[in-house]
Image (cartoon, rainbow, N blue to C red; front, side):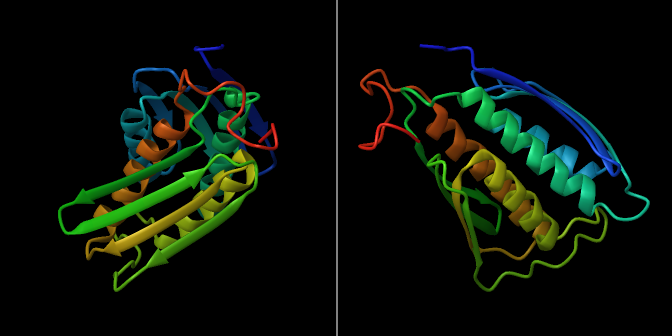
Length: 200
């Protein structure tokens, strides 16, 4: 069984140019360079808490808006995760994490089912645009939807509560990392693929 699951993806469009390498069995090191400073911070956290080695370089038309770059990075990350997992033999498949950051609490549940579905629920949270970083709940949703679509992942994110939008979004990325780390981990008791259908 492959215990050095790596992938490299390059995606170039008229709007963005992105190269990404990931090692799902890494130690949490990362080199992330995009023109979106807050996203860089979140992806470094994602790599560290997921124990993924991640190298990402992205350029995009951020003079127009950060939308294209933000979404396309999500697309490429999802493609890389899917490629690195290959046939998904031996993986636990499901992952869950609950992460508190000060006043914020976020829970993430995911299934590497091959079926893309994304749900985000926020209860009583003030998820306004982050004034300094220029990153909002809308950008978070766009990033996660793109990731889910290309990775073939079912992802449920629940913001239980929180007031500081920086803390909330950071808790989302950390919970996603920890849940994904659990889902991609190998269980030696699992023979083949964890599905009665025999494929994911």
